[in-house]
Every structure is written in structure tokens, then in C-alpha cells.
Length: 446
Image (tube, rainbow, N blue to C red):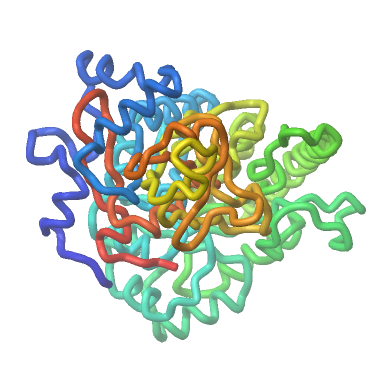
């Protein structure tokens, strides 16, 4: 595995509180610390901008910050919505060990849902968690071999599987007679309204195991093969968790989405319960994982689910502005400097350096970053967010000077970490302090 050894400079930087007798990444539970930061959550736009500008005054943008008051508020709200179910943190939405440690230190959170086996090996070696589920199947033969050779990793890491072909690849990579590897079966959570037929598929295209009978058959296949142990089941209802039910200015789409989500949730609850019943009749399960930030209330009401998954709601990206059930506070922002006034010093347009950080998924305006502070700015319809320059328009641009900074929000939670080596933590009135992202620790997991 790549990365610095435990105890290295990067490891210490990821846990800046460690040298002060505070558990790594755990929020300081003192009245002073809470009071110093609580005001940021409810402060007005001008006040927030002033705080962020002061906290980063000695730094040159582009830079990214995490407002810890907003982050902690969002973490508490996710736990509230989970209604007693533990939340497994979706690391792809965080990609920063300090923040993972911070949220895992809170009540209501347990374990990590990783997006890569190499990431899980990295987090295991760094001691982030001893309960790491890889949320996607892996074809990384080198990482599989490393897992098979590491007893501590094998105890802590669970691989995702939904087909015999994946088991064949693991056998080939790990070698004949490999030690036992933990597996989680993924049950397809999409909705097929035409009597279960795949002709109409609403949701993400993930596992081929849709029916309870298919899940039970794959369970038997796992049990018949040496070197594997089935310990969990996961199902991610993307059509509920990942689609906002209140898209701005689109009432007809909103009504259709709510109807689809209601019928889908009802169908999945019945089908998942039967699948878990059949699987448990064949093998004991340690966990049944489901849901995401956008569906915590719905999934928590399913008695067959033992734990939930969430991550994006910690950061509050713009794609989560379109939900009725919850409103996360923007915790992750990035700043770009004003470098041009193309229409003159008083024109309602300013040009920023860099900033073209679109989000993954179907291309569209909702995948672009959004100017946030000062309020009232928007991207140019003809240029959008550019590779090396980003024009912003609006009355607020008239007051911007060369060197001022504009704060933007990303459409998704985790992808900004691939653009920045550090996140600067803003807490109260203290100067921002840096912690490395995965990229800052020299890691790239795809």
C-alpha cells in the first residue's frame, strides 16, 4: 500500500489535536468550544463571509474550508433522523481522515462504508476503524492479495459481492487455499414496477440480485465455496436517497418523484424483508445496511435493516438543497480570488481564477458549483465554471475588488477533496488550521 507510515508527519497533521491530549479527531466537549462555534450555523450571509475571510486571511486561494459548527450540526441531525439506528459513514463523501475520526467519535455512528478496497486497507492501517465495508465490488488484484496476507485487515474489512465471477477473481488474486474473507451481499434496491420485470428499471444499476430467491441462491453459492464467509447484506435505494423530492421550479417533477419514491419504498420494504428472512435461514448475519443521506427516515422504519449509511449530509452540498425532509447546513466551501473586472470597476461582473469543478453524474446545471458568498451571484450561462477562470454575475459583483474572494459550494460532497490537498477547519474566531485530505496524504483511490 502507498502512504506514509503511522506516526509520520502526514499522520500527525491528519489529527492536529493529538499533541494536546485530545483523542484524534474527536470534538472537544467543552462549553467554550461549543459556544465559540455555534453562532456560525445561524449567522447571516455577511457575517459568515466575514468569519470565513478572517479565518483564512493569511492564506491564498483557491482553498477549501470545512465549517466545523455546520459539520457537527449536520452530524447531529443525521443521527436524529436515523432514530436510533447506527450510521455507517460513507467515506467517499468525506475523503479526509480527520473528519472521519471526528464523526466516528460521535454517538450514533459506527463503522465506515468505503468506496475502494485500497482505501479500506489504508484506513485499517491508520486505525480509523476496525469495521470497514467496501461498498462496491473490487477487481484490484493487488489489493485483494494484500488483504489476504494481512490478518488484521481480514478481521476488519468486508468485501462486496453479488456474482460468482467476483468470487472467482478473488480466488485467483488471493491464491489457492486463501484465508477466509468476509463478504457482504448486495441486494438490488431499484424499483421495477412491471411485476419485477427489468424492462422498467428505476434506480441505480448495481447488483443483479433483485429477488429474494436470487439473493438466497447466491448465499448458497457463497456457503459452498471455501475461503468466504457471508456476514452482511447491503441495499442502496438510490431512487429515494439520491433524488431530491423538491427540485426548485419543477412542481410536476417533484410530484412524480414523491409518488415513485412512496411506491418504491413500500415495494422494497416487503422485498428486502423476505430476502433477509431467506438469507438468515441459511447464514447468520452481523448487519443489514441500507439507505443514504436522503432516505434515512424511510430506511430506518424498515425493521429488517440494522444500520444505515450516510456521508453527503455531513457536508451539505448543493444537490441536497432539493429535499423536503431535511436541510443540511453548507459545511464544505471553497474560495476563489477575483482576478479580473472585465466590465470595469462598477460593472456587475467579476472573473475568478480557476474553479471549474463539476460533479459526477448526468451532465446538467445542477452538477456545477454554485456561488455562495457574497449572496446574489450566479455563474455565466455561456461560460459556467471554467478550467482557469470563472465569471460571476450579479449586483454583488459590483462591490468586489481584485484580490477579494468569492466562496462557492460544490454540487457533491466528496469530490472536492480530489482538488485540494488540505481542508482548512474553521472553528469560532480562531485562524483556520489545515488537515490533509486523502490527496494531501498522497492517496488516490479512483
